[in-house]
Image 1: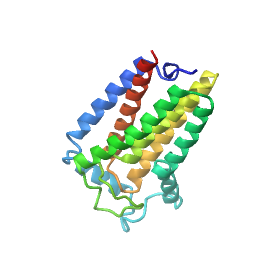
Image 2: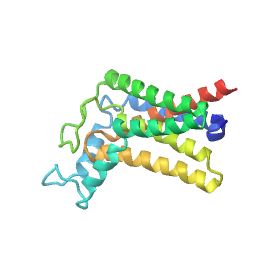
Image 3: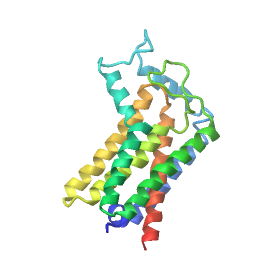
Length: 219
């Protein structure tokens, strides 16, 4: 049976947990009260056409691209991917990884919802949203889900690969996907950049905590 420690060393998990919590704590006491609002407003507006803020600066395909990328961080896609991976883990009797997956998915969803309600930050309202969004802004749910779940996917995949280069590729690909999903939320105007960074921090911190718990339980 594969052990979580083989996918993510406890030392690295502790480092990732501490760094993610530090970043989130800093942003939680600064971003929701508008410490970076002027810079964030300027950055968001710089992504839009000066004559028509409903249009993105850049090539015509950019809006289509970011709208499809952002869907990868939504609950429908993540639910399907999680169920498919859970099925594979059950078939191979990888109970440790199944515990990690379920804890990451369920815990991140609950934690992010609680944090959104607690901080109650309103989404950017000075430019048109290019996708639907209804919940509060801080932290970004898409970013948190992507960081927690896709990193878990990457670790699970990397753990069964024999070549070191292949393992690094799997982890790098998951990080690129996490970045693109977070960036798409900013391009679509539904999140401030600090919302996204906070979301990444929440997702990475929770995933690290779950891996550490799985390692201790395994021992």
